[in-house]
Image (cartoon, rainbow, N blue to C red; front, side):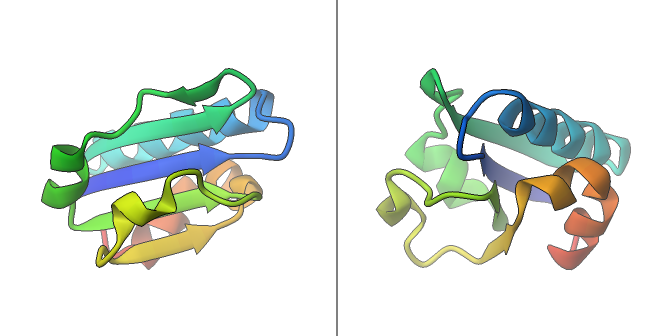
Length: 99
C-alpha cells in the first residue's frame, strides 16, 4: 500500500519527528511504501509532492494542530489521529488506515 502522512504538534519539535519516525518504521516493517511530511518548528519539511499524494491510497494525519496546505489532499481518503497515538501505537494507526 502507498501511504502519505503528515505529522505536526503544537510546538513542532520532538513529537512531530517521533511520530514520523514511528510511522515510517511500522509501515516499512509491514511492507508498505510511505512518505512523511513534517510540519514543525522548521516549517514544512520533506514536503509531499502532488504526485506523492495522487499515488497514495490514503493520507494519515498524525496531528494535534491543523494541517498546512490542506487543500492538497482534497478528495483523498484521510485518517486523522493524534500525534501521541502515532508514537505509541503506529501499527494500530496503520491498521485503522487499512494497511
